[in-house]
Amino acid sequence: MPKAIPFVGGFLLLFTFFCDGANAQDTPAVKDITTPWTASVRDFGAKADGVSDDTQAFQNALKAAESKGGIVFAPAGTYLIAGALSIPQGVTLKGVWEAPHHTDIGKGTILYATGSRGDENGPPLIQLHQSSAIMGITIFYPEQVPSDIQPYPWCIQGIGMHCSVINVTMANPYKGLDFGTYSNELHYIENLFGQPLTIGIFVDKCTDIGRIQNVHFNPHAWGRARHPSANFNELDIEKYLRTHFKGFVIGRTDWEYMSNCFCIFPKIGYHFIKTDAGAPNVVLTQCGADICNEAVRVDASQGHAGIEFLNAQIMSTVIIAPENEGPVKFTNCGFWAIKETNEQVIMGGKNTLTLNACHFSAWGRADAASPCVRLNGGSAILQGCDFFDAAKPQILIGKEVESAVITGCRLRGGAKIENQSENGDVQIGLNVIR
Figure 1: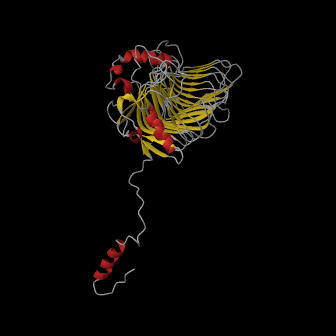
Figure 2: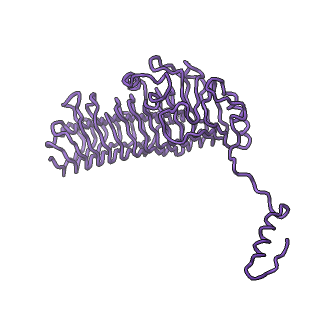
Figure 3: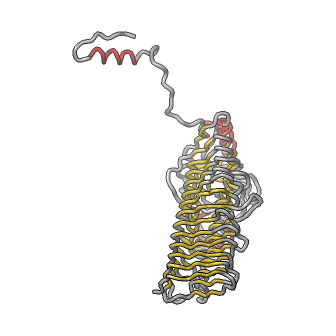
């Protein structure tokens, strides 16, 4: 390396430094990090014209990334996928979805899905494997017509742990996201938008802490698309959804965390069930169900943990089935009614229902004699709740209730609590009636 001769001002030192830096023999080669993609689907023949079948081009690109993992990039364009895609372990299929949208046809990365029309048991459109992901992509079923809705297989299905769905709009799938047919520990779902037609998200066989956040199911995702199939009357699709659609169906999962999840017009918003794998325990924050027959139905939950909603918005009814064995809690939640609503909470389970700092409005819409909270069994703790309607009964305690504590509540228009419990320990006190 040349040596500088010191002199006042250091000009020669600076000159020598730049000369040395330009010496290719003395300077290590700089690794090119400007292009992070493992492969582009365009390099494998994808046309992105919305007419040519790009299934094989996508699968070839994904296969090329399989040995080392990495990112397969789908640039902006409309890609017809007439078959099904399998994303290998450790590979991400990534598009250019940059923000939530109502299925912006012609913008970003869009997959037109047409495979297995009429066969809901066919292969899923996208199948994820361990530590694989789909990101930044819009999925649209151009042949799905609201006046003649046809079954399709699952839109996205996961197999194995650490499957991720991030920044995805699935506008109008028949069945949305399947993280339950196969084991799916540590799954991760973030920023998922669209309107599945029968099931939004199904979770089961998860023995280790799945996470679901920022999910929004609304038929606007389909109805506002600039596509002929999106020309429908919202009242018609609402009728279909309230007969067929369940937003979130949750089977066996341990320590599932859900936040900022929303659905509208479901038959059941959040349905907790027991499967051959077991029952769930779930914590839900800032979640809600709007204009639905049943906002929440708890058929089953784990006896030691159960289901807990915090800061939820519930528009219709919560039903806790007699066979449920786990605790169910609602904290700082708001309840209001649709025109068919009578009771806003029906408790029939074997464990404890807790309602803490909740408020209730406009129950008894179809039958003014209906109580807001009907306790048919198990135990209940109601603390610090506010019942807005001054003319209607607030709570009915049934014959088989084992215990109930009702304290610190505001019972407008006077206490209208009917206690029919025959052998239960019921404590009512320190409530205000104005």
